[in-house]
Amino acid sequence: MKIAIIKYNAGNVFSVSHCLQRLRVTPLVTSSTEELLSADKVIFPGVGEAKNTMLYLRQQHLDQVIKDLKQPVLGICLGMQLMCRHSEEGNVDCLDIFHSPVKKFPANPGFKIPHMGWNTLHHTDEALFKGIPQDAYSYFVHSYYVPVNSHTATQTEYVLPFSAALHKDNFYATQFHPEKSGNIGELILKNFLNLEK
Image 1: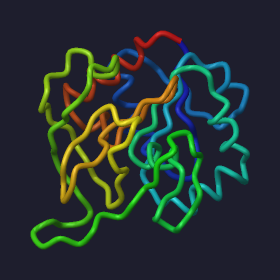
Image 2: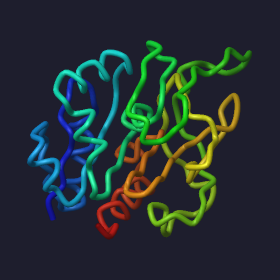
Image 3: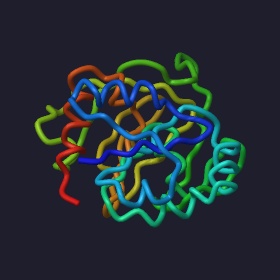
């Protein structure tokens, strides 16, 4: 199985790659259009800032490549946010795969921003969460969130309820970091690897 991780100027490529290697998968880290289109699965990881990252994706024509992918695609953290319509982080239009905005957490006494730490997952019966118990914990680190919407597959709450995962057609995304979420995260990644093309 050929697993590609999108190489760009932001991302958590090393952690994702290392986690996949623990699952006995050696991913290809690439920005090649041909390699991304021919991969069995594609992972779009993310740590960074939305505006500069979208600028880079457009300059490299990766924005259209990502939208054209037909195999299962998994966006992680910033990767998920960039798959949405628009981000308040830098006031930038994104890929619009999920027609939802990305908003900054409102200030609220007692809640530190960024949201950093372990939170529970309340999920629907999605293939990505097969075998994951309700209220399982996963690891988050982010200052922006995607509101609950028609593509929300999993939600959690910090300051307010928000989307912890999204799903539309062949596109999947998690706001949390499965590669940093221990056994639960490994199972989610394993479920992704087992998705039918």
